[in-house]
Image (cartoon, rainbow, N blue to C red; front, side, top):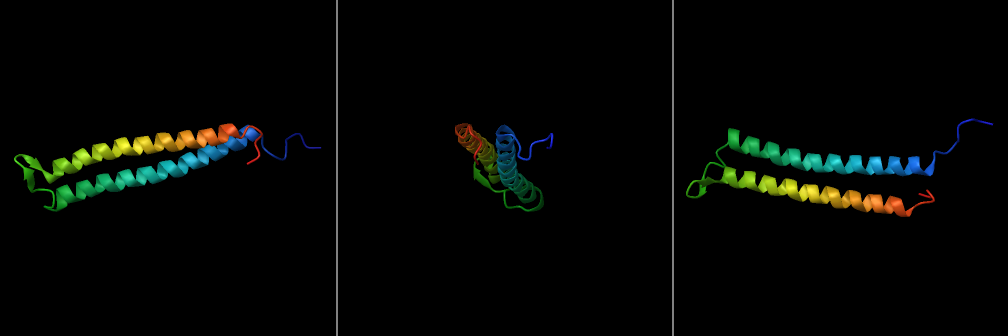
Length: 98
């Protein structure tokens, strides 16, 4: 008879599932953030696409930066809601039958 169990404890399995889902979500959200930020840098520094003014003193580059701030707020809300949903799903499964 082995001293270590063949199957991990249900709490360990729930934690592993939570960690895996969190990792996938963070990678996706980080990719969206990086693409948005690096696109701004490329458009601002290497092209003239964002140099034109929308209104007096406000260029497209400023508008893009303001939109990036809103993007971060939205992605934070997506992350919070998604992780709350995953945690609720795992919390309702007390017997560990996943």
